Length: 232
Ligand code: ADP
Ligand code: ADP
Image (cartoon, rainbow, N blue to C red; front, side, top):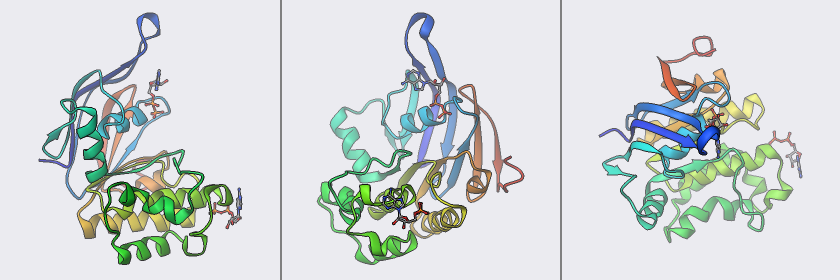
């Protein structure tokens, strides 16, 4: 099966006159090892789609599979377990714990799962994202860009099968953004990971193998082997 698949996915927020159809029957799948970008105007449903795919939000109807597991049928405990074992997240708002250092934040998913870190991978990730001399700093002592790097490192450290990233380079200058995106792309290839990334940035999207476009809650088009020009 694909690493992630959605069938006839709909999401309605609110009730009565306030109803918003955020997703209107989305069919999409993400092959194992693929790096896909989701683009589309603000309000087109990108975040909602990602949250539903990642099991962070419940769709109104339709199905989501992570590998051979169907999310809608899972209880909270099994869903949490599946997220911990198989999924890495990079949120727009970082979601770092303020009382922990950068290193503790990066290692947190492993600590929660009582798993040993792959120390060689830890070193490689920390050096690539440029945090070597910031490991003992707390989030409040880091710039926005540095906090974003911590969030990226934290998502990679457990070698999850699937990484969901919401604007992972939105707070970085273009050079550090490019470093992190090429690292993500390499990591996908080496470890066979699957990445689903929401972005507004055509340059960021051009690192993906495929770009899918949402508009008004529907998947309207897709581009294979994107370049910054073909996804503008
Ligand atoms: P995007 O990520 O593409 O900007 P979103 O998925 O955030 O789009 O939003 C899609 C639509 O759903 C928008 O019209 C938005 O206003 C609405 N929406 C998103 N989250 C909520 C929510 N929690 N309650 C009500 N409406 C929401
Ligand atoms: P980045 O490109 O990683 O976002 P910036 O150019 O924003 O970094 O910041 C440059 C340096 O200034 C950083 O190395 C960081 O140590 C420091 N810095 C920036 N913002 C903050 C902050 N809010 N608190 C503490 N230090 C900061």
